[in-house]
Image (cartoon, rainbow, N blue to C red; front, side, top):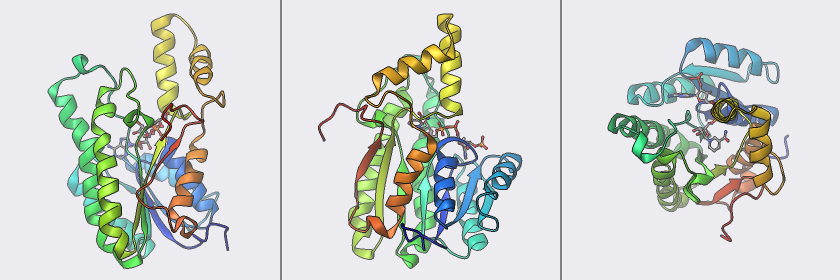
Length: 263
Ligand SMILES: NC(=O)c1ccc[n+]([C@@H]2O[C@H](COP(=O)([O-])OP(=O)(O)OC[C@H]3O[C@@H](n4cnc5c(N)ncnc54)[C@H](OP(=O)(O)O)[C@@H]3O)[C@@H](O)[C@H]2O)c1
């Protein structure tokens, strides 16, 4: 029996072939859960599932689905439930949205951003809900510290992810009486491919090195480093577990103390 008490519990983690999603899947598997991972292509899902099966043989499944396509999300939930034999909850992660200032983004960028950062969450919730009501399970939505303090150059994220905060509070109140808890996690700077890409782009623009970028980012954070995907996973696994039985409608930064807000 794991400390968290999620041995054999069945979770879907979206956008999890790499990065934060994969870190969450790793922690859930280490704690004895059964996990379905997801990414856009069969190849990336197969590769990640086979790597993760070194932690937990026979407890990792994978389903390729694009979160920006409603029929894919419906299929993702249906396949996950039939592969795992039920659903005790999900961790909602998305692919990273396009960066840029408001003035640099087109209407098409916003349209796609709405599908990626808002509609995907609504579709996932809608299709998972009957299963999670049945298991009296839990939902965790990953957004970003950008919803509390907007970050320059990511207008899409600053603007659209705030909807998820509204969704989480609404669901927490609506589903709490039915035994389902809903929470949100706000990652700060987490070392993933996304951050490596940003570091390389910054280094090219500034004629500097990715290391200089990471040093600059780390200096802003009170703990003086970027976080790891698994450090986000630890918090998500706790929220999905019965150990967090009185935590509902919460929004928890995992940011090394970066946010300046008192609340
Ligand atoms: N890293 C950070 O510091 C940080 C901080 C705050 C918030 N975030 C947010 O957290 C999320 C994950 O970031 P990350 O850094 O872990 O990114 P990452 O390392 O680039 O990983 C992205 C993951 O998303 C999957 N993905 C992309 N588009 C998808 C789609 N349309 N449908 C299904 N899966 C999709 C990718 O899988 P395939 O390539 O296999 O499709 C991959 O597994 C992003 O929304 C990001 O903006 C990140």
